[in-house]
Length: 110
Image (cartoon, rainbow, N blue to C red):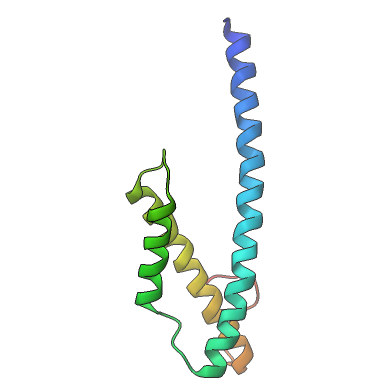
């Protein structure tokens, strides 16, 4: 293979990654819509946002289903970040629904 072949192969891999990223984004947004529903339920039931037992269940679920090549510690760190962002979504939605003056608009961070 010459340099042009390598560059073409690299470009093709990057195109595939772009496609995967779009699918990941769609799944994250689907997860976020479910989390918004959870926020409504928790607010009505006056339940806390943070549930360590549930987070442990999520980590156990992903560890059980991870077939690699991504290692278990890497997967856990990724899901810790996802869960952190989902907590932010819950806080924002609950603040919006309660009419708190400090409620943030959709798409902003704390």
